[in-house]
Amino acid sequence: MTIPMSRRRIKPSERSKAMYYAIREVSVPADELAAAGMDMIRLNIGDPNKWDFETPEYFKAALREAVDNVDNGYGDSQGDIGFRVAIAEREKEKHGADVSPDRVCVTSGVGEAINVVLGTLLDRGDEVLVPGPGYPSYAQYIGYYEGKAVPYRQIEDEAWRPDIDMIRERITEKTKAIVVINPNNPTGAVYPEKSIREIGDIAAEHGIPLISDEIYDLITFGTRFYSASRLPSDVPRIIFNGFSKVNLMPGWRIGYCYYMDSDGVLDDVFEGMMKQMRARICPNVPCQWAAKSSLQGPQDYVRDMNRKLKERADFSYKRLNEIPGISTQRAMGAMYMFPRVELTSWKSDKDFVLDLMREEGVVLVHGSGFCEEYGGGHFRTILLPPVETLERAYDRLESFMRKRRA
Image 1 (cartoon, rainbow, N blue to C red):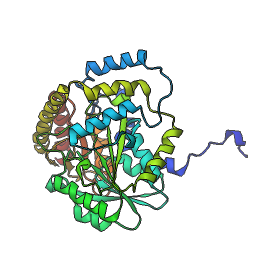
Image 2: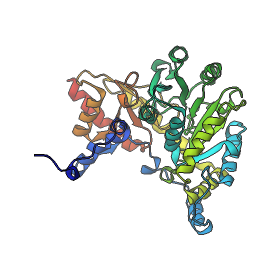
Image 3: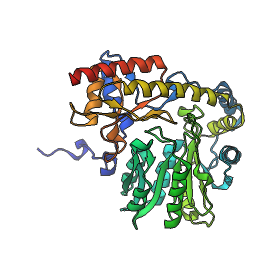
Image 4: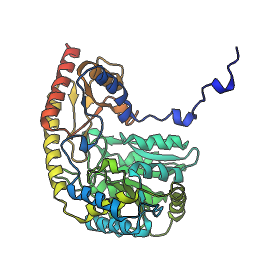
């Protein structure tokens, strides 16, 4: 029998079917287990507000005031000029960066910046070097635009520093950009200044932009962060940052990027991005107005956040290394740790994560979801829960590992 056209299932595009965001994909089976009554400890999503971190009250008061004071109509497609000036001033204060507000673009979180910048840069077959392991949105959007994500190794036993020689080796005529995520998601590494300078030299030599994701720039544990904005002016740079992590506003969806290049080599890329920004109309107007206050008011909450995260990072480092079959490097920044697991009882790290979830209710993210080549055999955990919650989760993990190794 022929199925009428009106009853046939419409197929999605191949590019959409290929998208796979491991961090939230594991939430699907976790939700099913929770619905069946299982007690779940969710260590998969880097949302500080789900734990004992709170958006500062003066940010929230500013948002309430913004709704009453702005006209709530459409705004500038590039972002409110007053907000962009405040961003440029804050980058100058933090990192000594000379950023023109005209080269700042406000986005709906860093996720939109990743999407739009890669959509501007890439044609079919183009390549982008990305850290392996690295935040999965980069590889997913590169593939979405029919490009190729080329991972470069972060060296695990050297505090996950980037392999500079591999970056040089993997550049080809098709390479359109080098991505750096510093402090790093998922490893918790903070790159040495020397590494950032060497990557900048490579970008300048080949005339390709360095895309530096710095959303965790102020979240470090006794290690100095070196921003790519400090590199020489001949290095073409597109720098991402936002308000979800340091500013404790993940649900506000406010991010930004800014362009730095002395010779105007990125002018056409910037205009290509702006064409897309105009098509999406504008970022959230009241949230921009309110987020500006977070750049100009007291910053004591950042010190408190880092104090908590360092305590939890120290605990996680000690506790995880006590578990048979688990080993980890120390996290020096961001909100994550990326332990190695001996997969003697599992075919893959994803199988390990799913089995742990089903048996013990602990939700982690499989390392191969951050890079097939250099993330396999690992998992990502978060440093955000209080020590008591982390202890309960890792006790379950230890029980699980001991049973499987018996």
